[in-house]
Length: 147
Image 1 (cartoon, rainbow, N blue to C red):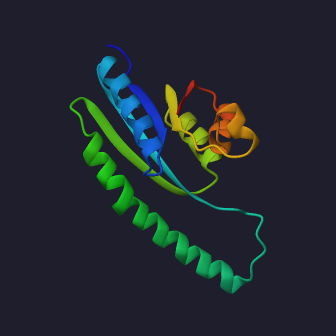
Image 2: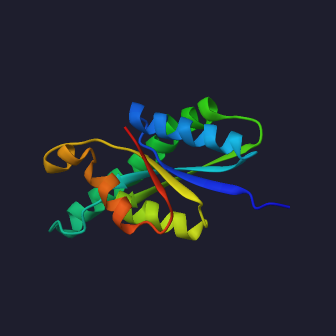
């Protein structure tokens, strides 16, 4: 019996991330099925100086963002990508996208990461966004960057 394949997609609900997810689904179909993990990350900078009150407000905002992301972004994505033979899971967290997606790939023993890219500045000239570039540096599995 062959190992079931697991792919992770950095997913933000945008067109680029949906294209990455659709590509991953197509690749899973070719391989006979598997698991697609959609990872949504609410960005968090740990280097901001805040008072205790500001931290409490920020925490409350993050909790609302996590709930909203699950209901408004991940549920529709699961419905759109649902395909026989493919299990679709979601993971919504607060943190740095590249760190979390790379860690999820290790934790779930993923075979590959798929990510769309948003380019700006110097990295745009390379054809990569900063999250995609960071994932390429951190990941220990193949990464497909979808334009």
